[in-house]
Image (cartoon, rainbow, N blue to C red; front, side, top):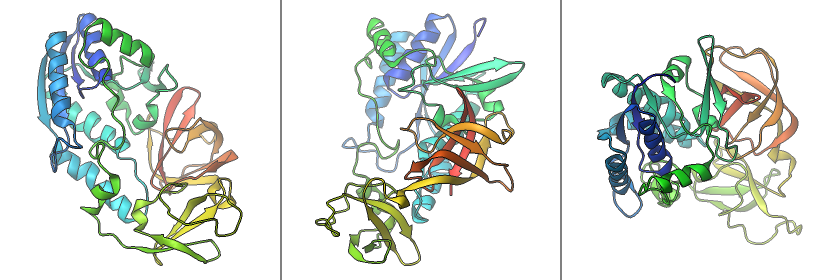
Length: 358
């Protein structure tokens, strides 16, 4: 990026966006900070850190020497992200709202707002890189593989990528912390946020019960044997081990129990014993709601993919893309492939896009 630019930085009140703003200011750019308030239904201090995060962002802006605004995107968030989140859980799937938040809020509503301020581009604290060649913008993995966030950005289009930069893409997290300390930023030692953005640290089941009615039912083995009771299919995800409360080893094997499937019509949760039970291993997955970072589907062939964030890339073959669906066939069966989660395709370090697992 050459020449002085007007750059609007998404400030979350965390160390990553703080250092992003500081780096750009050090490079001589005109930097404006925007704190996005995406949630306001129950913004209490016990679980939701929005107020503290906003104060931290303001403190950072003051030290860095930039103007900062607090902008409310709660309406857009509720319409574009939260409604989808509830619909998916109601349908027995496990969505990843952070993927949708990036595509619909940070790189759409926020991007539009930044452009209205006369921005040349926006910047975020994501650990990802961008490579521009011949007018094409490639989304790349972040240099720090333990923090790479390209998985969450796979729905970005060429138009969005062309107006976004990721200053932390070539930096390791340890270096980001060091820079924050050096710059005396108040977020230098702040703990990274975890979990779903609008739920914060509050108990997930308690939160979901406010919006979706619970419907208890039977926990059964694949053969139909009842081994327990679930509190509602929405509270369980494939591969889940904790919280099943199935007393003892029902078949005497001593193996732990895992969620292996959901029978929605019968409101039954299918559970199996053993981490490597055949029902937990799938060599093929199908995905829809496809989105490609190069605005066109990749050619069929050999790639690698993640079917959840915290997993290594797995070699796979992409079959022909047709009727808004694509099929990935893996060299080794994948564990707990979960409907509603995202499968993201890579060609080396290039993030090609992906879709929602069916």
